[in-house]
Image 1 (spheres, rainbow, N blue to C red):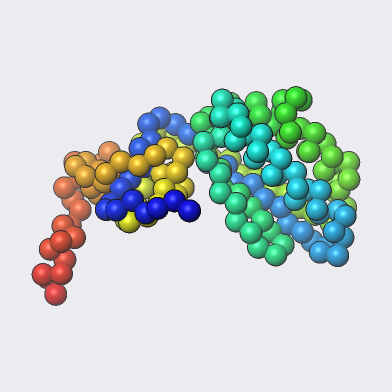
Image 2 (image 1 turned 30 degrees about the vertical axis):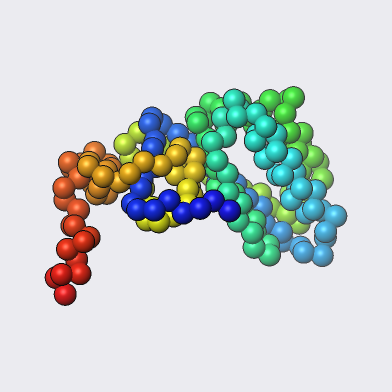
Length: 173
């Protein structure tokens, strides 16, 4: 498990990127033979993407629940994400075809995804005494100082001096 990085940090992001959410929902738990192949296709894709960073996946985090596991992924670009999804030589397209053949519109298992194209300067992050997570894990961390001290500063809306000094917060009470 990664160790916490002391202090206030922000993600070291430069340029545009893609936030991609993908998941499944098991509608009929007893039909194990239907949903297990869908569930097991994602680890194969993640291993492939992990071994081939040139494909564009920057970071992925999986979240589990009984019926609806999902992933939060950060991609370098929409072009990389789309190219991966349609490449006949990679894991995704065969898995997608197998899902459509085995499940189709039966209603036993559902799949979903959402794609967000994030433009440079339209996001901000802060992490206090945290290991790298989310965008910080995808892009690395840098100190939240100077213009990066405040949310408005990280969004290029101020010089960062609009953030109250947290050391003085205790003195006010």
